Image (cartoon, rainbow, N blue to C red; front, side, top):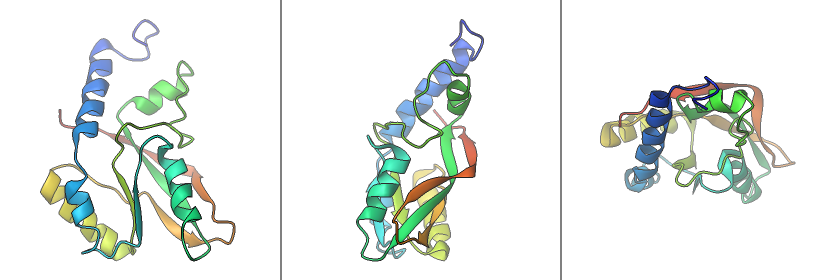
Length: 156
């Protein structure tokens, strides 16, 4: 990637360190706040990618619901790598396998705002509202065509 002028060596190293820092973040605080903030469902985002795990959540609900993902938090510059065409690791499509991608939790929007704020205070890292659960008898999770790619700068 550095030879093709897509990333500098420093950018590549920053991305690697950000990935390691992200994977090292424990889900202990996030998990412990779920009941307090009225979570209805949750999963870790790992090998199936964000869309695969969202689909698994929708497939296992009593009600016919789907999920619309409107925001994709990505380590800064990873989307640029995929969009360059050099590596297609399915990031923008939602199937990038994660070693430890954090938690995806379904809860009422007001609770989600408070949850994200409290988790950031505890962990010192941001959390995001990435989508919403909708009525859908087909139970489909999807990334919206106009989804925002959120370039996340992490403290390493």
